[in-house]
Image 1 (cartoon, rainbow, N blue to C red):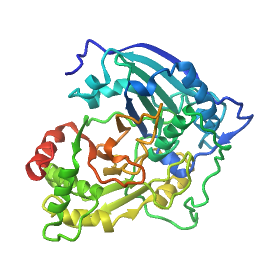
Image 2 (tube, one colour):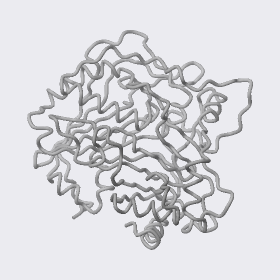
Image 3 (tube, rainbow, N blue to C red):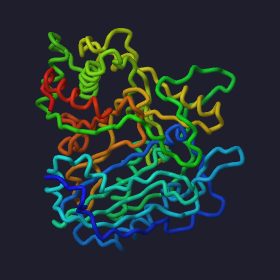
Length: 437
């Protein structure tokens, strides 16, 4: 089942804004870190799908009443960007709010999730707005609530990455669920955590390998039109498939297994290298949560961004060798990224996702801890907008992977965005060599 270009299943669209329930105060500003500004051309788009019980009796009035209290703690997300005299962007915390979109869908949640073109069609469930060209009028966060004819609903999130990474976005939405349940929190502080990377201005650092500079975007924070048309597809790797894959990668070593993420990265890296042939990627970027970052409910970009470099042909390499590189040879690139932004006084225009082939480990993101009326999402999907031509691979856990404290022992959802002319070849290679479809 699909949707024709002539029809749209989404209708009765309404727009509004919701801000903090109390005034933040005059002249309150938030100064993004260098890492935040390095991510300003990227956007996260998420879709949370719920059954009918989750939204039963939840009127838009009740939803907004909880949001007033919730946004008291996330007032920075309600502000709008300005520029200082030097040109460096900052957020004026003026309580303009997050944008709310209400919509209806003429399908059931089950029908929607069974669509073959789900990846492309779910863009109807979250806004694709970017910041600019008028900074003072551009919301950083947009939330779309779409009610399906079965009584189920989706919660769509459009999140400016300059606010924080995917782990931060997941925590943001999870906190809304807690306020919907009537929980209360102490006043939120937005001071930067003490373990933020410190730079030595006098020390020259090499340019980071994980980002590339793009043409100046000024106040329209979007990557310029690329001649390369990108395509996204996703697939589910079951726990049985994953166990077999891990065993096959390690060959005769029965006593060792690479973790799921590193195993998937290795076979996808190898498959893409075979398709690209002479242009095989020898440097890849890895993004994952920072295990040393213990600060919760803080708007910031704290994920690890590292690079892995191979000094051998990756297309013909053993997957075990690539997995070993990812596991043991990751070089943290964050200091260099921050130094690059600092050297240009916060005016840099950079792309990280897709500057190299980029693998993003979202296994630790709390997508399935969100609860409404005691119901967790049936399915959660995330995507990154504003990526470079080398492509991005996202690895998420599945709904059945979300037992509290039980670890992630099940399958994975993999979403791959590549140049359109590579997708068929990569699909074929993954199926031929690794039986992944």
